[in-house]
Length: 576
Image 1 (cartoon, helix red, strand yellow):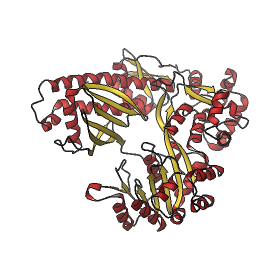
Image 2: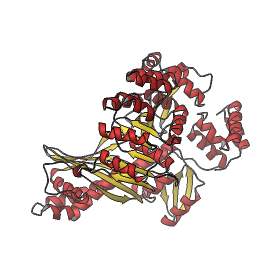
Image 3: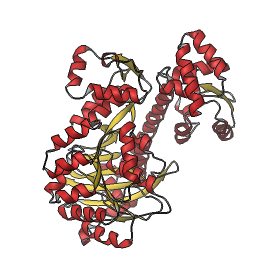
């Protein structure tokens, strides 16, 4: 949507939405950077994205619609397939005769309009809308899908109840009802953007739960009679033994939904009421991520780029299970992946396939462990090695030796903080002088849920400020916010605005997606001295903070002040 800067300036000034001074500052920055003025105004929180979009609609004479709280008929909504709606931020909301009204974030997206016109054979009437409306409408896809899928599952479950008992498990697994039920569950989970599917046998029912943005949600309950067929079907897909019900089993299979390839990592565990299944959904492609997009910024970002410019040494990502460590390492590999280097990995499991990267899966049951794999990898003439996880002394020693002998080594470690990685490696038996010679940077991380556009600004009370100051260095956070131009230079800590969901934290539309919060600890000369003196992790962290490191919770508060998440969410994930 092109609008001249002069036109935009006069309208915003006349409407009293922003000051002349703010616009002039954005205009001069636009000339320096080549970015649009509107984008700069929203990035500095001078004006909200939706407010700016409404302004564009008014100036261009395009009708503006808000769909928040509007129930769209599923037959109208589904005229545009959900993947197309999600990818292009376009929603069909009103169908009259041969006309279809569509709500869009960008009415200049002519390719999307033309595609829908050809698909529906209707006259398309584009309307401008806001992010909250798009999010609300996409949720309706899921609700409509769930209703439709619920009917399919109910119908197929009844078929199972009527006479599948006398068939053997393989016949049941390959029968139409079992195939349809499992396929429907997988489609629904993918549509909900779930990261895990839990299929849990209870006393009288089979409970289906999805983990979405790190939180488990009940999806549906099925009759207990459906359990054998569903379990058998998933075992067949994953190449697991159908006749084994007493021992845990692990497997994997792939599928394609909406043009996206997905791998399902399957774990089957015997429980009191039957076999519990957990499936991790892994989107096969991870290209296109940048350090900025996953959440690095400022000094931490500079330190990460400095670390990957080195040709030797070790980079460690630290955190509990589900903290996004693998994504961080894959993002680094994506940046390092050029035709001039040979990259080899040893993983358990291979979570994402990457082009031009030699990826190897460990197989402990046949003696192919991280340690054995790493020994072989160094004979494959690699420049960069990624070890999925350092679990024991042998793997730690081999990784350190690989870093010493001219390789850049990336790996993960299960510790609660970046500083905690050093004592952990020393406990494993790594010699301090070898550690300080190889370790370049430790990254501590967690994932926080990201606020949607349905958020409101507020200021902390005095008590809230005092409570927060016990956990963070407020001065360091404020300094970083000013250095990165998130807030004006004259902003004080007590005036700093934060954000929260407009409809309350329980609102289903309050959060969507997750982003990392990080602490990046470079192993500087002073940190090396502390390591050699057998200092504690607290001493190492204190030194790193004095050299400019923001802790995870401080980085979280930084992102809360940006409006990306809430203070409560940051404290929840860091203190869990």
